[in-house]
Image 1 (spheres, rainbow, N blue to C red):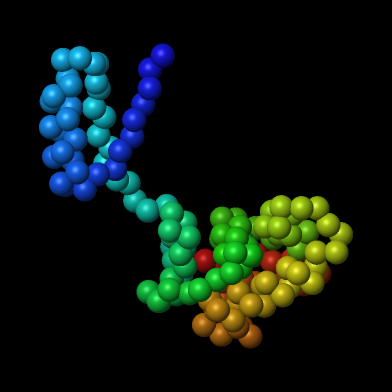
Image 2: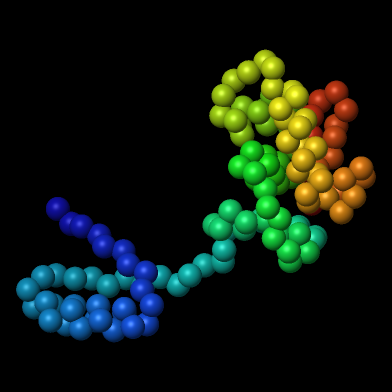
Length: 139
């Protein structure tokens, strides 16, 4: 059975590992695989950036502190731009439970999220209300 060892190293650690590999190369079979770091996983919209790999939200370059529910709601909405999502869909995706009484929880999180990320929370740019249905994200 083969085993895979994946290491992320700084320059000094890499030199030390190279010496160890050179010392044991005759005893075991090693195959080096190098990866090139890709772009950070995230979403970018005018004035708003969501860096999922760091669980970070930036508004005009400044970090915005969000609760777990606010962050998860934002990511869920932003991952479905232009799609109208009901309060129930948002609740089930973010809270990860089924409920018929989810509306006030979602409304409160959206209200708080808008205060933190919208340039004008009374006239939202990103999170639009679709009356009688739910919300949609407009990038």
